[in-house]
Image (tube, rainbow, N blue to C red; front, side):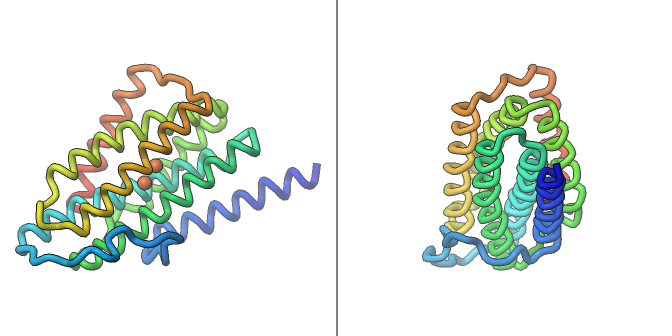
Length: 214
Ligand SMILES: [Fe+2]
Ligand SMILES: [Fe+2]
């Protein structure tokens, strides 16, 4: 009984540590090499830089939310294997966060001022679906990653052609988000009801519009 309490406490402490690392930039070093590390910097106009920074700030905000979502799921996961899968995805998402943060600094910009809100809101959603059960957590992940892939595809269309560094990061993120979604489906994700999918799209729209500027 006591072991179980300690385990839950351990999870909560690890979650609090993750929240602080995520919200209080700099996030620190990524575990894996930045995909833009060997890509040459190109000359961008001020207008292009501002636009690229806005898009990368949106992507960074999305990664802050991903941390909240996965941590919320992992905290309430019922199954140890499920918890490990969530944690592994969260680790990859943390690299995404660090890469976006690094690119923002190179573009002389910073992350969204509203990071605590993106994290807190996503954590609450992750925890709520975790409480409902693993198949719903997985359903949320599958739907979120599907929407994120579509969103990153649109960023690949809208980022300046010359901004090869941002593009390298977004491309790798996109491939890995696809994998996270596929893994969630393979692990038994439930199909979310259509109204909920639309609500998630609406929430993402508010977040992307806001984080582009703030
Ligand atoms: Fe990500
Ligand atoms: Fe992902």
